[in-house]
Image 1 (cartoon, rainbow, N blue to C red):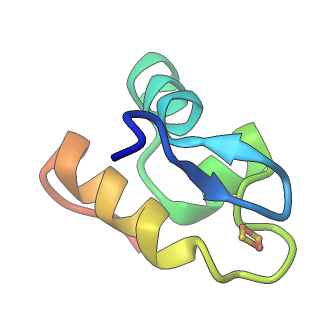
Image 2: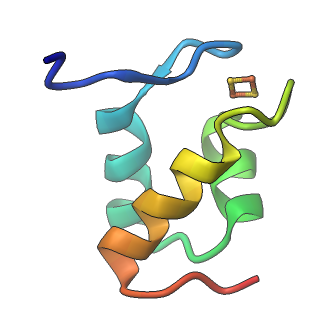
Length: 63
Ligand code: FES
């Protein structure tokens, strides 16, 4: 299995980039991640995965 899968194929953003941004910039919402990384800003198909990452790192997701 790919250790660092591409989460957002539209913007070619990998899991590690999103996780790093969430941790380092203390991102709380899907919108924060979109603003910071541009992941999730095209088709929206990866938004569920971003949600799961926010939940995993922060324990919850602010909407
Ligand atoms: S896969 Fe992320 S916006 Fe399309």
